[in-house]
View 1: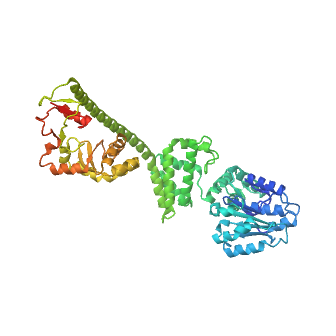
View 2: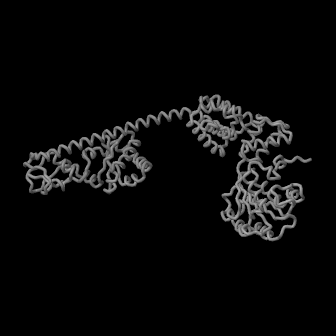
View 3: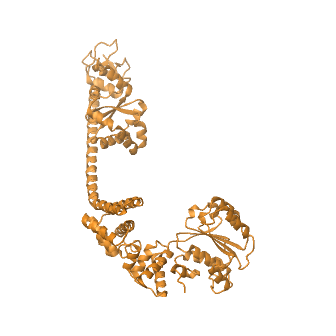
Length: 582
């Protein structure tokens, strides 16, 4: 008798034979039992999970001569002929080959005719997502209101590609991936019935390779059974599928941890000599480190590993790595795996990837140390800034108290016997521009210094850093440009006074000074002024630089004040509120 592939010979012929889809089986059986079947179904899910098989079993169940019944008898003429595909009223249509609007129009014309051989016409449209937009539109009306003797069953692996108008007209069932335990039990049953001797760990590994698809698992079992003459072992499965034993990966992982380049390269050479492909080795190694991460982070990871069959054996290897190292290795392997698709020499790229992995354990430690040092330096810089700001506040407070005490005591000014009071009298005229920074002459002298040039070269990075830290501050700060650097301060000139004042707010200023520290390497204070004042100061610096900061009394006021507390009072309270009396 001609040999039939195992996946065809063991294709489910009844609902009870299906594996891992109990939620769907029960719903369909109840609908048949209660005569509440729908006119259209949508079966979606990964490949090899039983979508088309369930559709055929449903077609037999509603057309069985002893039914409709929750289970087809598979003994009557109707069941046998549907199984053989010999009933014209039950059609399985491949949408990948019949995806045009003309094919769907032809189907729509034939739907109206009554069935000739069985009770219901059933149209099973496989890979329905391959239909064109025009074909879907042609199917819409018929799918919504077909004749009572017609049932549509649409099957797809990509439901997101099906129009919502089609989905809304169907009862949707999502087929899930079949669990490892259910797959292993099914494979064991097949082996017993087919007189195949198979080790349990071999069947478990086959189940893990199938990625939840029963058809893939049975196909691999069929191939290995043919190769091994009816005896399936774990090592034979590895040899046939190009896999690598977990023990070998454990040895390779420890060599990577020890940065033993010689052992790593020798193991790669051994893999290649055994006929392993570089891309398959990369894939399996990626799965292995993923499994180590699961073992390390999840207490009971027995059912969550992909290639490791017994997680307890590899717990010691997982404990030897930190989570950061495993994350780094997985990220590196994933990047190189993407590049390998286009590589002319994949083995070389695989070797480079593993050599890169050898450096990750050391890099993780170095990064941790560098992060700690950077954090410490940042903390020290923040403390220095706070100390400097506190010292400035103390000085301002001391000057304010001195000025207040002088006013309260009624001390007389040394020039013309004047004193400060709260009355209204002619106020002194200030010829200097308002809110100029102290030591403006020194800023002007340093406007061409190397420190300012270095700041100018990094200004775009500074703006980007401010934007990343807080985009609203960046919007205001963009109006300014650096004009000078003096010791620990950067002078920025603004065109718009509102932008300058908003930037000067403590919270915003702190953000900018933090970025200055990060980009320039040590703490800097932000000092601001108006662009027009800066330009005026540069133009007049050669004529009379000292006059920019002098207080000039009114023409009718004799004498001139030499007391610094008068200037301080004006600076604190404003010239409109301060009156100098003789």
